[in-house]
Image (cartoon, rainbow, N blue to C red; front, side, top):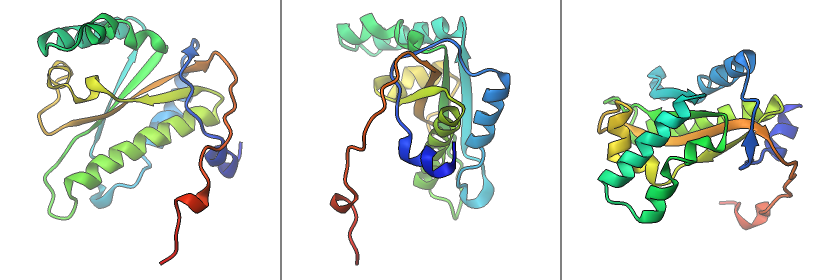
Length: 182
């Protein structure tokens, strides 16, 4: 797959199953995450790989967090099952570092770029993925359970695996509706 084809056909695949990325595929995905724009070369990221039984541990973290933070019953009831939607999850964290030339927003954007780069690397290797956020990305209890500090931001949970259906998606947006000239 060439770069243009990759950029123009990338999609989110919400239904994922085994196999997860193998060792070699994961190495490429990891390398892609570390090649994103990084003003000041401060590497403001951390990645936590969750697979196999660790998915149940993450589900327990979600459940305990939802209960402790008194979420709606629907959120609590789904919590343990959410990490089981894919054979591998990579939690992408922006590790904010005080820096005179690199504001917080740039560090968070860099971490966000890493999620897209990882998803693109997976897609280019015939895998599927979907970038998820939601309540558990913002939960202080989840951040605490993951040993993150208050300044850290979970920018996304990248679910990876093999798509269960081939659902090529056509472009949703027209460039002329979003681009203008000054």
